[in-house]
Image (cartoon, rainbow over all chains, first blue to last red):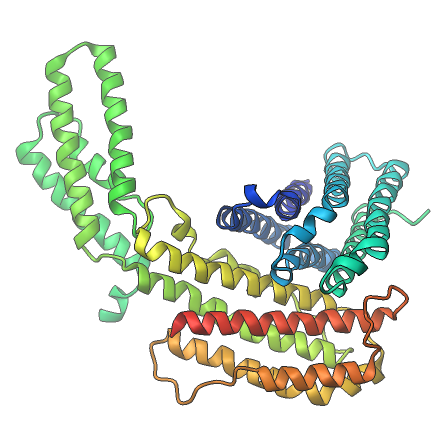
Length: 187
Length: 290
């Protein structure tokens, strides 16, 4: 089905976007090039919005609920990008480098898994649950870091709390979208 | 006719047509080969991004020259190589000159034309988000319009070879626009949440003046971009935001960083932080337009 190709492309572009966003947080201060980063971000944004446009054109009216989830999903990813606007001192990110990397990697794995499911039309609920669990674990690690360290060292810890809330919302929306797309019932 | 000439597509088609006719005439009289290399090269050279005629034109000329050299290596005829080079160089000259002087696309005008609908969409989108937040049962709206306008953003400002004097300023503006779109999308995400009605009712009186002033700020940016005179300076939103913040912290605990805090409070706090970011970005954009 043509629409499945559009979904695959959407998840691919969303993955590219999240990688660019997290890469910025993970990079060391001296290797960070904000201008180049913005340029890459711009290209990734255009690719994602183009993919979304195709979904919009190809999707039936009956699937309106999923369309809303596709929208919400990228809104949350863009929301994750606002952390850099709020924290001018990028050295704070170094504390969370490992946690950020793990979140980005597990998110990437999950999005790749979605693409595989769509490509092979083979829905594996067990492996999806496992991957969602893995993503949850990485978010939990960041939450632990938040409780133990960030609350103490960050100038405004609330910003990391918002970031955590976004990550939790992202995981929930991914789960809900997966179930919506494959019309599967919760275990 | 004058209005028609202001349309990019019409200007582009006219430019291509005139160049094609002119290069065909030149080809008739001075071409050294019968391969229509003059009009073909002229049209090919003209396919460059805005503000990038010379750099990208030269790049394209280089591509054509590589093809000619490859043809020469295959045929082994020096005479044919000279003739083709002659035609290609004339075509490149015609292409570049007509692109530069025939209905030229001015980067500043083009940039403004592309940015203006985005700012207008931001203004409407922002109002819809506020409506959704305040009237929790209102009809949800989608991002179609925002997506479409963001897809039209002038990304030629990132092209290598674009005027280095203009590049920095244009890129700064574009980055600010994309950052505003991130903030607005984050707000849209937060406005989808079903908040405690009492909480919304309490924040409403302080939120509305901020929203009104933000709408006025957007309107001022639009006025400046339309090259009209501003009737009055817009508010810097400082007073409105301080009042909003005061009101918010009078109804929720000030130690937001505690994880045990209600989700409604955290989401609303995130929404208010987004308003703060939006204010900062709008002020930066306003300064850049002065």
